[in-house]
Amino acid sequence: MLHFLRRHSQSRVIQVIFFLIIAVFVLWGVEAVVSGGSPLTTIATVDGQPIEQISIQRAEMNLAQAYRDAYKGQFTPEMQKAMNLRQRALDGLIDRAILAGQAEKLGYQIDDQELRDSIVDNPAFQLGGRFNKDQYLRVLRSAGLTPGDFESAKREDLAVGRVQNLIGDNVTVSDDDVRDDIVSREEKRTLAFVKIPAADLTAQVQVTDAELEKFYEDNKARYAEPEKVKVELLGYPVDRFQDGVEVTEERITEHYETNLEARYTQPHEVRARHILVRVPRDADEATKAKARARIDEAKGKIDAGGDFAALAKAYSEDPGSKEKGGDLGFFPRGRMVGAFDEAAFALKPGEVSDVVESPFGFNVIKVEEVREERKKPLEEVREEVVVTLRNESATEKARAAADEDATALGNGATLDQIAEKRGLTVDRPEPLARNAAFPSLGRSLPLTNALWELKPGGLTAPVDVNGTIVIGKLIENVASVTPPFAEVKDRVDAAYRLQKATDAAKAEAEKVLAAARSDGLEAAGTASSRKVEVSSAFARTGPFIPGMGTNPAVKDAAFALAQDRKLGDKVFVIGSDAFVVELREVVLPSDADVQAKMIEAKKQLLDKRREDAFARYLGELKKTAQIEVNAERLEAIPGA
Image 1 (tube, rainbow, N blue to C red):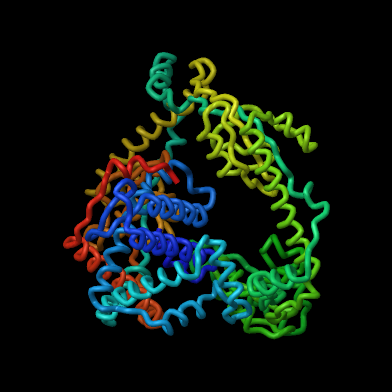
Image 2 (tube, one colour):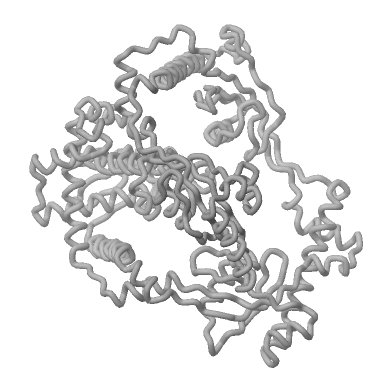
């Protein structure tokens, strides 16, 4: 997670996540030490300093939220459980305590000026690029912090940073290290392969009902209907709570100034047309030459005064813009692929580029208009600001109503009674599986998780779901059911045939591999009436191999092969298909490419080695630290 956050440290969202995590790890650790801890609530000690239960609860909660923000709907309760965030939270607090102790031993003290500078320079506390005291206090209030507690914690944070700098400043990398790192990352390979598709062999598979029934019994879990829940939902649509909402000038100005950079600054954009002649990624030189001749023909007609839009309709192979005369509309920097983006933003209105090669083929670009970056004045966006603030106020009113009604429900009122009082309707959908969307609301992981944690009759706290505040009630858990064989026989038959066909494909591939060892892959493929194909070039990163599919083991094997050991030593199965592979080509980056990347690569490699060195240093400190953990109390802490 920390690696993910470091790689995205310039993201405003990630900066906020960092702020919250650090606030929790630092503040609650400090608070536990200042208070001295209680024997009944102390979960761990580091060199005699206590780590309290509440510290771990808050740290776990904020780590979970950071993961949710980073991974969105992909972060499931199962992932959260598997990651053991409670232990991670405790580990973070232990590390923090060790480093703070080491900073104290080294005599690192943060004076008032250094502390003041760190706060003033924090973008979270600035408006219009300058420190704003009211903004500072607002941010602290939203995080539940007082200035005194935060500033005490920040001093410790800066002292720990000095320890980290002490280690990092002694780390160096040579130019040879950097070159080796670039070559390793930039090296590409191609594979020749013989593919035996399972689909070619399914028709040959003979099956009996007895075999299918046995397969069904052995794989019943595949055919089980998932566990479901029967629920009732009471929604408070935000737009129903807009009546009576007033927006003051003070709120309008405050919102505008706070969000000027993020929401009300128009980015530098261009409106461009283009002509694209496509070139397949695995095209041979003859195909590339043909495409180049066609784009050169179009460019020649443009240079001779031809109408760009008309020529785009005649020549372009981009289905999204061809009929619009190649018009791509306005787009900001970074929207298009690198070479295209660079060329487009180098042009003035009316200018046409030279031929530009991109991953999609050959392009000619014409810029029609340019919009420079511009901060929109308040009067221009006033209506948008008012609508935003009205929605915020209406959301607060809807949530207040839901909170009030949640209390009434806890005191014995029913959803129907509350709905009648508010003029709302109770939604009673069909039983829902865990990954299903709510028919009237859409998907909501927080609401789903809350409902699945209830016992029958239980109620969720109000949850914001796509513009509606919702209270959910669990009526019944519907157990998982496995349909009888007769109902799923067709699915069983298809799965059984595919499995047998995959086994047959693998067996045939083993024969091809054996022949390739003695006769070579080309001869083995010909003898088995299978074509030898060649992938396009691919790098080490990611598990995907063009023309073959996704399999990390194949990617690892590809980069383990060498010129004196080209043939893969085993058959690989990707999906249902079997492959025999052989190294065809190693493509190394040119000296010019390596040289062009040296500066940035050196920074990245140095950062990585500094992180590794600091991790080793922390590991050595932990070996001598007196760390005691009450495992029973840790296990008994309520979940985040």
